[in-house]
Length: 329
Image (tube, helix red, strand yellow):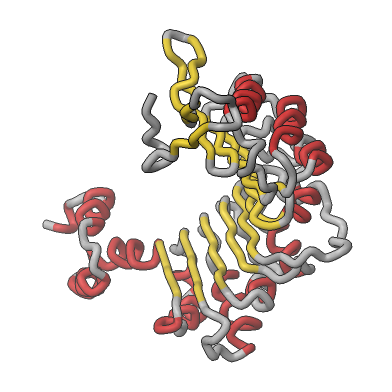
């Protein structure tokens, strides 16, 4: 009876087998289920210390590697892994993954670029997301992203702030839409590329950097960053440079939790944020404002509260909500 069922139905049936041992059993039960179960088993691969030999299988059996769409590998720096594993085994395994859609390399920062050293004939036309813990960008990294023309999301952790990055051809990353990484690297990669979502995980946002990031060839809709100054000047610069911002998260090491933080200060910040006519959510140093469309009109629906006493604006109490999403009015 199984041979009479369409492949799509067999795939649906096997998709309910979430336990790997059950899928292995299905793969060995009969020829009709073998290909379906194997496809599900190898579609998503997560490699950790206990199953590092999995990559050897993907090298010796390229037909299995070609099934992989989502590949994650995580190895802490204290895990004893031979250097040859990164220079040969892992790179060759990735080379065979021609259907790869998402790649995540959480490795010692000096090994990730080595793992990206793939065969000259390897291509990754379906790869849209790359996350890697990388110490510095080298030729292996640039060679790899040159083989992934549809890469849209790039997450780079721990890239050191080298004084001078190698020239990055504008032809690389032509479809990059989302970037997460250092401020230094963002200023190099984003101009001229269609990046609409920016998250700066290290380094500081300045008014100068805002102008650089605004050179994205797409409208910037989301920004997550930290500054060391008062947020008000940067908010003014953002309103001009990135007028279409929808979501803004701006942390700051600037200490304004003193006598300057009062109702007047909040009203000034509120007015500055309201001037960003497309904003739906703003989190400024943990203080949250939200807007929604009500009766076709942009309406402020969530804002922080300050209780005034009868003296002046400097004598007031700041009311913290239980969570940022549960303000009362």
